[in-house]
Image 1 (cartoon, rainbow, N blue to C red):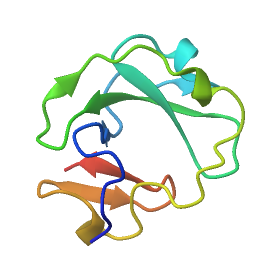
Image 2 (cartoon, helix red, strand yellow; image 1 turned 45 degrees about the vertical axis):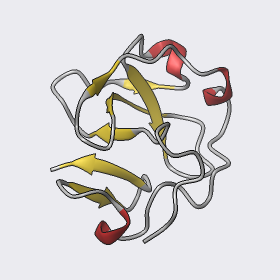
Image 3 (cartoon, rainbow, N blue to C red; image 1 turned 90 degrees about the vertical axis):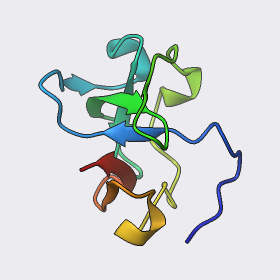
Length: 98
C-alpha cells in the first residue's frame, strides 16, 4: 500500500454523484467539489470530496488545479492502494467511494 505524503490531508473522491459536470479547474466546480482529471489532461469532471472515512469535506478551490494534471502517480493504481470502502478509478488514478 502506498504511504500518504501528508497524513490527514489526503482527499478521497466520491465518483459520479448526480452532480458531476465537466471542468477545467476547481473554480468551475465550487466549494466541496474538486476537478478530477486524468494524468496530463486539462479537462476533467467535478466530484464531491470526502476524507478517508467517507465524511464529506467542503474544501475551497485549489489554485494548483488550473492547467493540466501533472501528477502521473495519482492516489492509486490498484484497489488495495485505497482505504476500506473505496476502490481505485484507474483511468483517473483516484480512490472513489464504492
